[in-house]
Length: 232
Image (cartoon, rainbow, N blue to C red):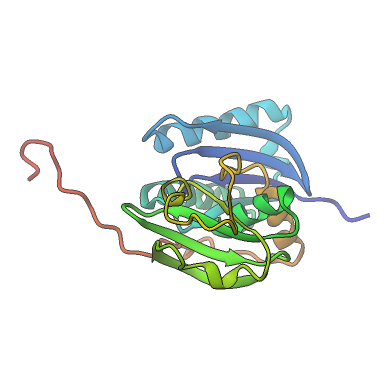
């Protein structure tokens, strides 16, 4: 009998910081924090809570660490990937990456199984990071940074509803007003379902290089002008 992998899953690509512990496709533990601008503080606390609640020496039992690789928040991704790499390196276990937009599509498919999926992550103003997947989660449109216009995605619907989800979806409601689109605010990006994808990758040995893996930022980071006296 094949032993299902015990995996710690880390998701920090948006404003919600979340961590889960999974064994195969089973979710064992889940923790989250929506406290603004606190990923650097809260992630380590959530991981410690997971370790504590597990009730055993998780460092002996853990088989891999999975992390959401982006696109998404530059700072959030950097914090999540740094923590995941540190844990994987320190425990000498594999590092697995999960595409952020694919994860949103995967979550959407659980609720809307016979649709197309348009995951969106906010990229400021009317721009979003997006991709489109069919009912089998095959890629119809690769990941890109899009300035959203009314008919930009209409060609992809394939006579099916397009499920729009993610933290970039809300600002697009008034623009994407064709009845082919279904907006569902309950489909929130988090680490709950990461373990299913991560376990599939673990079984086929799809691991990242712990020394050289970097988040997928998609766009270069542009720092805002400081408002702190003496730094501008």
